[in-house]
Amino acid sequence: MDMDRNEEFWAALDRLVGESEIVIDRPKGTAHPKFPDFIYKVDYGYLKNTSSMDGGGIDVWVGTDEGKRVGGVMCIVDLLKRDSEIKILIGCTEEEEEIVCEAHNGTEFMKGVLVRRG
Image 1 (cartoon, rainbow, N blue to C red):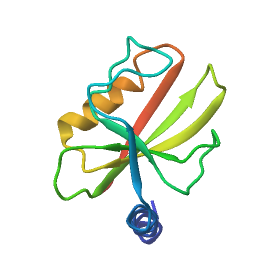
Image 2: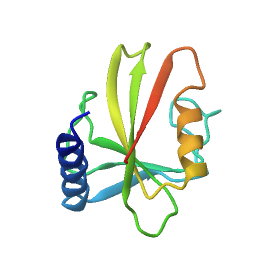
Image 3: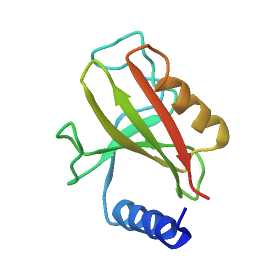
Image 4: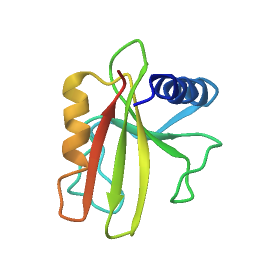
């Protein structure tokens, strides 16, 4: 992989996150609005004034690491909605990254891979 492009990608994400307000609309411990059996184990929200494939803001998982560094992205395929998108992981510990991976691979209809920052 071209390391310069790799670094430029992460720098662009850092800039996007740094210049955006993070809105947590699904705090840790709350239920999903459409699927009440799904409880968020990591804060989940979006970047205000951004857009993603589903028409909403770019989704983010925000962990407990104080540095709030962009540590990776989840690349998601949703077979029910028939779409794909990324979700940015901000300040997630390794344990929180695993929780996020499990959340996006818990059904036959959604699959995701974590791309960690090098």
